[in-house]
Amino acid sequence: MTKLPPEQIRDFFARSLFVPGMVLRRLSHIKHNWQVGWDPHSGRYLPQPFSLAADLNEVIDQIAATTPPDRYHDHEDIIVGCVSSIFSAEKQGGRWRGDDYGFLLEQGLMMSGRLDDLILAATGRVYAAINSGQKHFDDAEHGHLRMLSDILATIVFYHYGCRCALEEDPEES
Image (cartoon, rainbow, N blue to C red; front, top):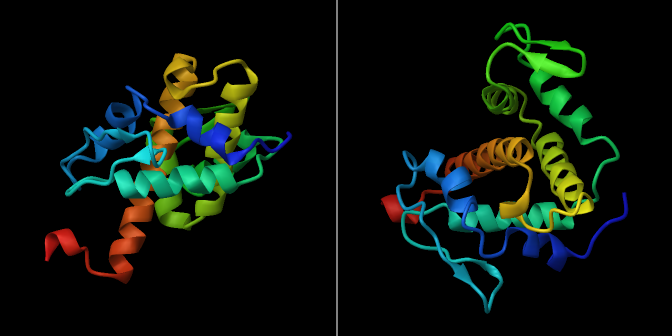
């Protein structure tokens, strides 16, 4: 796949009505302010107190800087494979059966620490949507949108957790 300009990747997420609810809302037990706005001047979600908008912006920047893999599903498989025996998941005909796929990705990342594979999977899913004519997050096919949301929420959660492990969160001191 040909790498797209970072601005095109950021535009995929710009002014989304769905990103806050599908990605940040599920993490509201960590930071309760999930209803974030878009700053058209900076082209980023507005960092606000008690929100994960800054972490989401960093994840979008990582995706924009990443060269897409030829087969993003392979990277998801690596993550899920780390926990498949623990959560009785098995791959049948190209699909994982067993526990919820988003849950398996989350647990696989937490157990393996293979963030790069999940970033590659997210990048591949964004490129797949764009290359299919879905130029914006809100226009993506429902199943693809749900999976991308699961992956993004997992990365934001992991990103925030790693940051907190390295420094004290100023909002909570």
